Length: 117
Length: 111
Image (cartoon, rainbow over all chains, first blue to last red; front, side, top):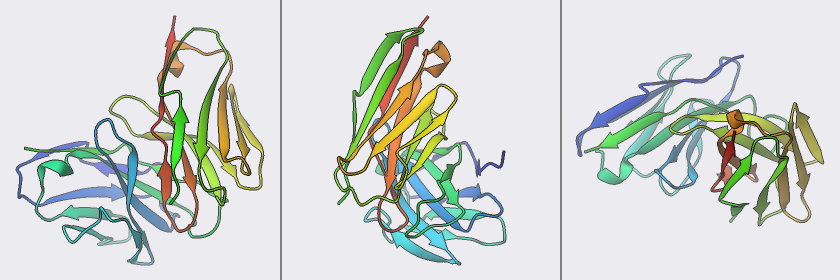
């Protein structure tokens, strides 16, 4: 069964450093997403990406965050200057379609655990 | 703004029991609802997807129902096994491209 692949599985970084989290979505999917889960809290939406641009973002996704699809397969989340409160599990997801339809669900990756020290 | 709540937050049952997990949402204008399983420190595994026009979906020992008008979904697990121990999350898609997640039900099935 096709999978969403995320690397690395765990990253430790110093406060103020830049990090890039990487994802390879399922090849025929058109919509890509980042979610995060702070320990003990709900999974929260960060951003959705379609046709090489952001289609929707949450209040969490401020100027410190950016996303990119640098080639035909990778999808990245960059955090420019990490803070302690950015420590969380970050999930990448993809879906065949998006927008106002409900035919297809989301496939999530196994996550990257980011620890900011 | 859509809010999703899951009750109970935690559940412990002996092996073999049938059980029901509950999910409620505040805005009934949803496109679909998806149930996920999350093992400790791991990713989200999709279990069942119910489209807004559907009433239920089944996969093996799992059955999920949806009552859009009352803003509720249930996940029924038949003949529970220790391997079913995990956190179960429901998420709704309502407007735009984002999923709104509940806080999950942490299930422990004791041998």
